[in-house]
Amino acid sequence: MYLGSVKFFKNLITLVIVLLIAALIAYVVILSIENGKLKQELELFGSREIENVANRGNSEDTSDSDNSGIEDGTIEGNRGETTAEVVPTEPLSPHAHLFPELYAVNFEEANAADTAEYADDSRYIYLSFDDGPSVNTNTILNYLRDYGVKATFFVIPDESELSVSLMGRIVREGHAIGVHSYSHDYEEIYASVEAYLEDFNKARNMIFEATGVWSDIFRFPGGSINSYNDEERDEIIAELTRRGFVYFDWNVDSGDSNGASWDTMYRTVRADVAENTANNERSIILFHDSPGATFTTWVIDDLIESFQNNSADYLFGKLGLDVEPLQW
Image (tube, rainbow, N blue to C red; front, side, top):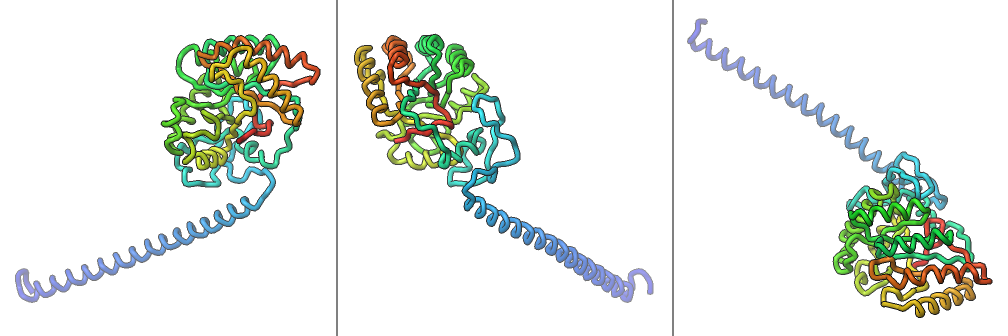
């Protein structure tokens, strides 16, 4: 056999065919091994998913307040502490992908609220102020300091020096601070669950930047029931409650947002509180500390003095997770 002969080419063709067959066999073997590994991984993943589902089912049937559904981490019980947020992994919802870091710091405490035992004392008065901070907030804080009273401020934060300074003062002086809104534009924030969460998240982050405190309580603009949130109300409440946030409405309206005078507020607020006390109900009073709430700054000290001098021995408190929510 010599190069170029017929026999040479026959042998060359045979060798090429053998090599191709060997390569094909090797490829099939490698593919089979990879498929085997993939199958094992899928089976392992499936078993883990089944276990996770079972565990979730067990946690849903558990009535006591353990740490199920919360990633490893420590939650401090006091709202005033600067604590990193803990994001629970369960339960999920159709809106869970929205702002995945937006969870209450005291998630466990808030989710135990249904079984919590609250002090039921009808003598308690909770002063709450919406729509600040403004220059009026400073005046109100001065009166609260002078009378030794704590209150709750549901704020509309902005980046101005005044807003940042006053939010810091609210926290430093021991008052509760909660989310009210960032834009306070009813049509905008109540357009969808996503729109509300976006506004809420922005306001809450700004409060933290100014105070070092993550707010776990909030008040709906217009209250939890208003003509703007009919379609989205239940979903918004369900989603924020799932994330550990607690909202408060009110049962005494000072009327200051409608321009009530000093005389009107002084008479109606005292009368409404007295009626609540007679009915064994505590009073959560709605005031405003917005720029236009001038009459509020005029009447607040007189109201506090009147309640402190009353024979009913009224007590003042601030809202928080240890206070039973008043919700319409």
